[in-house]
Length: 405
Image 1 (tube, rainbow, N blue to C red):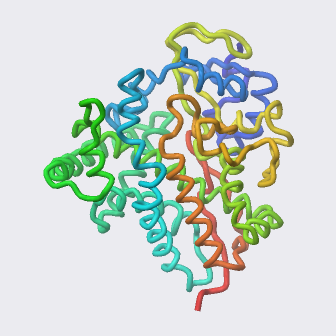
Image 2 (image 1 turned 90 degrees about the vertical axis):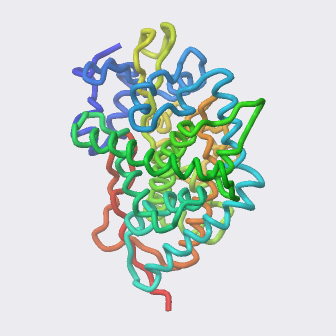
Image 3 (image 1 turned 120 degrees about the vertical axis):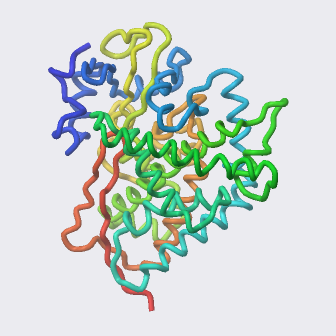
């Protein structure tokens, strides 16, 4: 094991500018790092991150201090029967018939409305005008909340993501996140209580009325889940849509292939999750000492799992630093399940419950954008550079196209 003083520092400006170069050095020379400032071990190889997600010795106890201050206690902190029952209560809305029949029209409507707002302009920023709004608007509508509150929820979403990615502990970012917890609770609790009394045909009503073996979700459970849904459901889809188009525009032959064969859209999403994952790091906490590449991780210490590095591990993927929608060592059919080859949605019992919702949103959004913008190209001078540490994606994606008449 080494220390952050010798290895690349994930809090340094150099790392922020290009984490992928640092990831390569870490995988090859420093697979296990102790970072004193973060009070965390850092692991970067695919095998080690996979183990941290799947081996029961690794717990999610770190979420007690990492997530609970802004969300309240969430399903991610639970284990055993408590976790399995809570997951069973919320999962049906995010898969199968419920997702296809009830929420797919919501997804399609929101994508169409956002695109119509700029399709006649001939240019747009796909981050600012589409990707950052699309998943939040979908979540608000799925919950059956007023559409005029889209902007309010977008503001809360931004504050929550800022809090979760605040690795340098900026006090203003922390304060904004804590304020959002109070504001969201003040908004949501009365609505939850009203839905209990008068349930409708929406996700919030489904959460209010769900019951398994006599177990239901409390008002606080539901509010915490809504907060978590804003962060996890918003950030992954936001940055994934921008990432898909950034990667395709950088590879015009692959963009042409996807445009010609829309069956390749899921493959483009899966490869984006591997190549430029929206979430670059997830933390875990082992309940006992455990051996990983480079040494022993001490029980009770935080382990920062670098998904962005693991998904570029040459020991797992051929030509790992190349974006390729035709990749043979990434199985698209499994990419949105707990059997996924990539690590962008985690693995094991805490595999992302909203993976199929994200897939539906990406497929709808990408297809509608390709249909509406047939000659899409990067605007002159647009570099579409990624930003972010905890989560990462293009800060802007300015494009041009023939205006829709």
